[in-house]
Length: 195
Image (cartoon, rainbow, N blue to C red; front, side):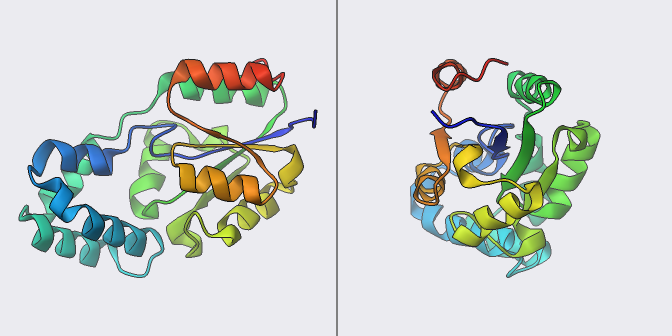
């Protein structure tokens, strides 16, 4: 078994709740009708193809809520998973290199990381909108590896989306799709990672 010395985490859906979709599920009754358009808009914003203002304007047009209400609602639905944060802190203490690889609007995420004192958890932070690289693009994975001076064979990637996990595996990473705390712990134990 290959020695894992680097852990890379996704943010929304792993380290924190996915406020974007939680807010829509709570507030947009006919969400299925809008889902594809909202997914497209998310990719455009996460890749900095459109500005935050344009992103919110287009969502507002799509679902009929004011831009500020959308932004504040999404941000209010982002809740940090304290168990995951504790696990990352423990990994750092055991000298694992830790990376954050996330599709996100940087001007939303940077303050969240700051306020919750999460910046110091990571040896490298790769936010899609700052680099114009969005998972599952292989270049996004290559960029975080470069930032961490890591190799795929020694890296475990944790993400809630199958498409991202599959891309990581195709690039030679070990990868886990995060669905629940207990299954994550089991996956770590199976890999002889005891945190």
